[in-house]
Length: 187
Image (tube, rainbow, N blue to C red):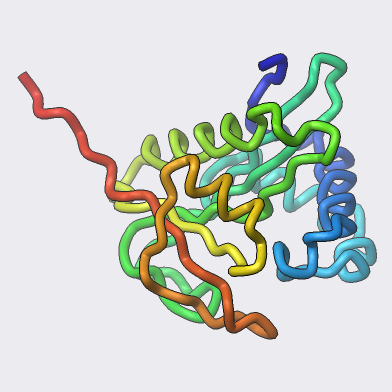
């Protein structure tokens, strides 16, 4: 694979905005994202600068990108840190210390080349490496009609948790999760 997977940097905010707006125009966007193109396009430069700086800091959120050999972003994924003591996100509190994979997108010309697999591996590795209370699981939501995305997630080890998560305008989002990471015994 000829892509470099890396965390965003604060100065990447224009590229972060560009790929997000493109993602929101993808034919799958209505079932893949909770945000609309119109809402995202109306946001100020200051919003995108702050959002990208927060993702670059990697404290509560981290965004990863796949760069092709020409430096163009082929795909992106973001990971939110969720703790039981945090305010409820997506309608319910976290069931434990976990991360939540969101905003997954691979540009159409780069699909089928392993970009999503590499992005998900990086997102999961970052999740397991977090300091503080150990992350017990990595989760994501996928619309039951988004077969392409669901297949990618399952191929990368995400399995149905048996839980559906009601979301505004979308009662059919399925929760997928990775099992708690098993550490090899010391010694």
